[in-house]
Image (cartoon, rainbow, N blue to C red):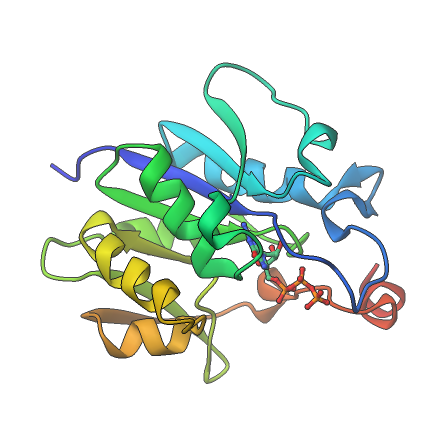
Length: 192
Ligand SMILES: Nc1nc2c(ncn2[C@@H]2O[C@H](COP(=O)(O)OP(=O)(O)OP(=O)(O)O)[C@@H](O)[C@H]2O)c(=O)[nH]1
C-alpha cells in the first residue's frame, strides 16, 4: 500500500529570466503547464497547482480533481519549497509527486519510473539525468513536511539542503530531452 498520491505543480515562480509567465508559453499550441498536468495525471488522485495571486486566475481548473492555490501567506514567493510545503498543508496525502511548469517535454514514463521506486524506507525519490540531479521532478513523503517548514522559517530555500536532511533514493534515468527546462527566451528559440 502506498497511500494517497498527490500531484503538485510548482507554478509560483516569477519567470524573470524568461520575461513573461513561463507556464503559459506554448509548445504546439498547448501551454507548458498542461504538459506537467498530462505527465502527472495517470499516477495521482488529484493535482494541486501552487502559484501566486498574479497568475492564479489564469490557470484553468479542469475538474474537481484539480485545485489552484496560492503559496501560504507566510512563505509566498519563497521558492519551490514554499510550493511543496503549501501543497502538503493544503492536502492530505502520503506522497507528493512534484513537477515544475517549464518542462514541456516531460513524459509519463519519467513519472512512472519514479513511482516505481516509492518505498516506505525513503523520504524522497529524485532522478539523476546525465549525472545531474533533478530535484523539482521528484517524489516527497509527507513526513518531511516539518523539515521543510523549519527550513523556510530559517530562510533556507535550498532544495539541495533539504535533500541532505532526508533519506533519498537517487534514480539514474535516460532520456535528457524529457528534462529540458525553459528558463530564457533563448531556450525557447533553441528547443521549440
Ligand atoms: N509555488 C511556488 N513555485 C515556485 C516558486 N518559485 C519558483 N517556483 C516554481 O519552481 C519552478 C522552478 O522555478 P525557476 O525557473 O527556478 O524560477 P522562476 O521564478 O520561475 O524563474 P526566474 O524568475 O527566471 O528565476 C517553476 O515551476 C516555478 O514556477 C515559489 O515561490 N512558489
